[in-house]
View 1 (cartoon, rainbow, N blue to C red):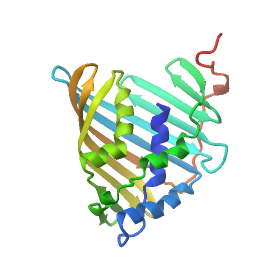
View 2: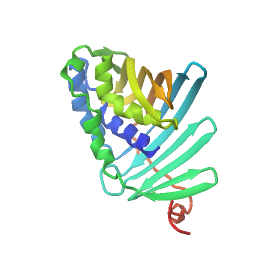
View 3: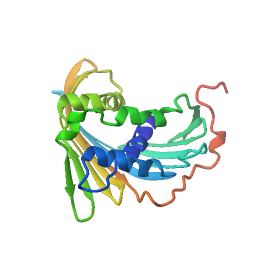
Length: 246
C-alpha cells in the first residue's frame, strides 16, 4: 500500500500548468519545477472500480488521504490513511522505516525501496511526442484544464505497470490485461495542480476467470503553498518489527 502513496506523491510533482498559450507538454514540464520545489504536500485520492466476471458484479470504493513534509531534505516524513469498505489502514514513513496500523495490529518494516520516490518521475512522465499532439488546454474562470485521451497503446505504456500493481491488490493473480477508453484530466490553478481525474476500462484474467472492469480515479491536492505537519501515532518507534523474533 505504501507504493500507492509514493506513486501519488510522485504524480503530484509532475502535473501543473502555467498559461493557455503554452502547449500542454510545455505547461507540465515547466510547472513541474514549482511542484518539485515544494517541501510539503497533502491531498486525497479516491478510486472506484466496477468489476464483473460473468458470475460476480461488485463495486469497490477506495480512498487514500496522504501528506508529506521534508521533501527537500533528508528528514522526509509521510503519512497515509487508506480506507476501503471494512479496511482501515494507517501508513507512516520516517527515515528507513515504514510503520503500519491496521485495527489493533501495529508493526514496522525497514524500507527496501527508499529511492522509489525519486525514480518514479521517469516512469510517469509521458514521453511520446504524439501523445501531446491531441491534448487539450481549456482555460476556465478558476483554473486551466489539461485533457489527454491516449490511445490504448499509449495508456498501456504510460500506466500499465501501475494499473497491474493496483489490480494485484485484489489478491488474485492478474494476467492478460488490456486497457481502453482512457481519459486523463488535470486542473491547474496558479501554477500548481489542484485536481485530477483518470478513467479507463480494462479486461483480463483473474484467478483463471475472465473479467471486465471500469476504473475512475480522482485526485485532490490541498493548497500546495501551505505548510503540512505529519502526525505520527504515539509510541510508533516502539512498534514490533514485522517478521522479527519475539
